[in-house]
Image (cartoon, rainbow, N blue to C red; front, side, top):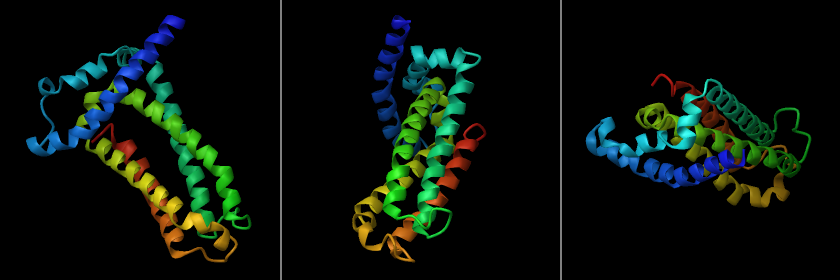
Length: 201
């Protein structure tokens, strides 16, 4: 058991920087060639799929469905917690009577935990089918949307959230906070659709 666990950890450590580098340069390669290169031109993705983790997840009859199910649960938990906070910023929902900072402090741990679950399971699924993900437009769109929702949250926390004590009990939140809430909800809807389309487009 320990030997197998060490193999998983070592493989994950080895694959992670490759995945990051591949995703960073894939867009440039795609643009230069006018489309996805042929399999023979991207041995890096074949190597990723051939790692211990990739082959184990892909060849198992039950592992991939379990990982995918946990991934979906992570997305649901993260999107759900984010939506609850967004609704509070819009002064809607059953939490509108509670201070925004209190709602945020309760939901942020859930959001971070859900994000970690989503990231780990998403990486495991990518490793098992790296070439399919690389050639999937929906996968690229989903990554772009995830980046956008992360930047939106970052701008909110570096901006309106810093002065939350001055407006959290006001009937209407600042315009920037409300805009961030609407954008967040729209992005999460698009992320769900993009993730579902990966298998088809």
